[in-house]
Image (cartoon, rainbow, N blue to C red; front, side):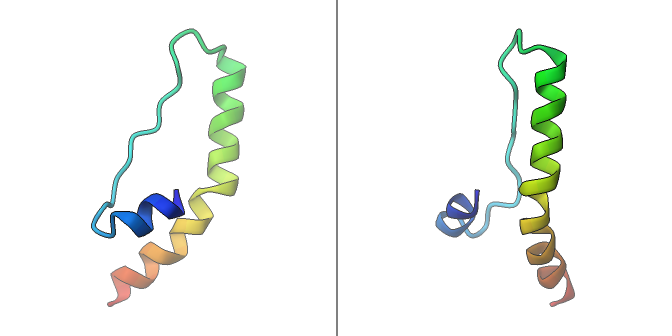
Length: 52
């Protein structure tokens, strides 16, 4: 995701989806991992940009 952000600097939204038929427990596991491992890397960037 950081590579996408670097390549498209104006991009501020992406769509993340799960394939149809993915079991609910798998979806929840993926969302939890996304929340813990991806979002924090972007939170600091957006906070800094908003302050400018």
